[in-house]
Image (cartoon, rainbow, N blue to C red; front, side, top):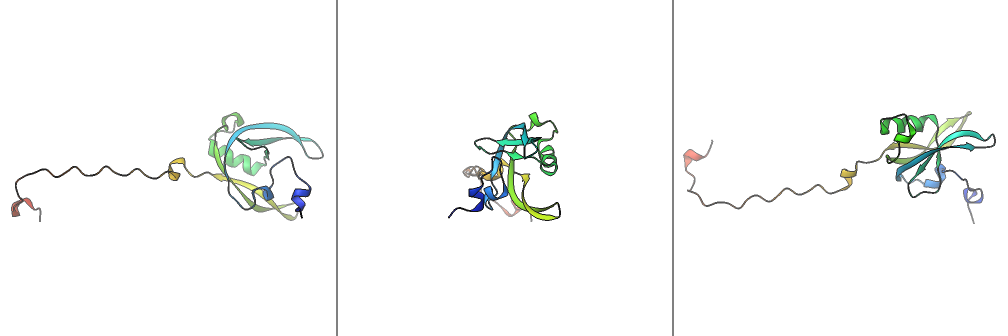
Length: 134
């Protein structure tokens, strides 16, 4: 039996769409589109390889501005972010929402390179007590 979210799909990303996961996504672009019943123009964030966009609110836009180092949306392309579902207060009710946090650094996911092996020992005179520093 379908869930209520499956019965009433949305054109935009919702907290229920990420199902408790914390996907790391790359920003593709921001479009300004008429959203909702009033068809108010809002910024919609699109991700590479994903169909649904995320309608931006002030909280998420501010976080991306910090992560991208720019408040110009055209400078956000290529920025990697992690999405997560949480709750917030809206019009006196607690509602689900999506928030944004920094994606783990690319290097953190790769294994650290192993240091080179020590050079082979060279033949030298045997150590004496005078060669030992203590």
